[in-house]
Image (cartoon, rainbow, N blue to C red; front, side, top):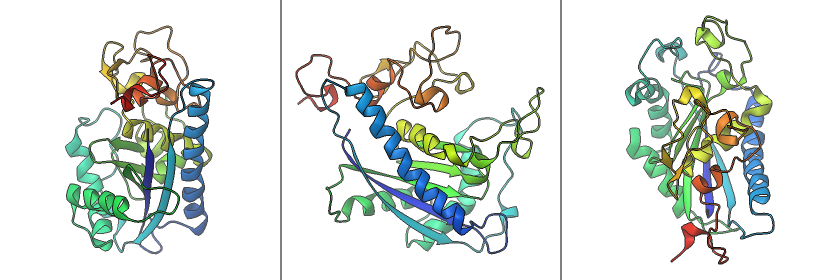
Length: 273
C-alpha cells in the first residue's frame, strides 16, 4: 500500500442520448468515488487497529470527455450465459467508446493510451504527496460487457453507470434484470462500495463470490495467500468487500492486499527490504 493517484474519467455521451450524463449524475460519480476511498480508509483502520499501520493515501482528479457517439453503435450487454467470458468480449464493447475518449484526451487508442494516461498521472506534481502508483476509473453510460470490472495489469477500472444504478430484479430463470442480462446493479448510493471492490482488484485481491468461479485453493495477492473466503462450496465464507461489496474484511483479504505484518516487526511484509 502506498500513495495512489486515481484518474476518474467520465465518458459523457452524445447530447440528448441515453449515454449523456446529467449534472446530478456527474456529481454522484464524484461523491461516490471519494466515498470509495473512505471505505478503504475505514477498512484499513479496522484491520490494522493496534498493529502495524498501512501507508495508504489517495489523490484524484476528474476528467470529463464529451463524445458525439451514438450509443446504438456499442454492442448490447449479453444475456446471462449467452457468450464466453473472455477479454475479447469485454474489449469489443469498451473500445467503441473508450478509444475516442482517450483520443479526445490527446492519447493513443487501446492499452497504449491507458498506459499513457496512467503515466501522466504519475508525472504530475501533486501538493499532498508524490504518487507511488496510479490507476484510472472510467465511468460511462455506454454499454459494457459487465457493470464493473478491473484489469490490474493495465491499472484500469470500468464502471457502466446505468447498469450499476439499476435495481430491476432478474427473474428466477435468469432472464430480466438490467436489459435482460439476468442481473441487477447495486444502486447509485452503493457505487462507492463497488469502486472500493474494484480497487481491491487493482491492489491484488481476488473475487470471492460464487459467480466468479473462485476457488479456496487458489493463491492470490501480494503474499500469494489462499482465497479461503471464496464462497464456492464453503459454508464458512463470511461477508467481505471482495465477496459482496460489504464494508467488511474476511481473514484472507488483508493478506491479498498486503495489509499484514506476519513477523510483527513494525513493517508490512510487502514493504520488507
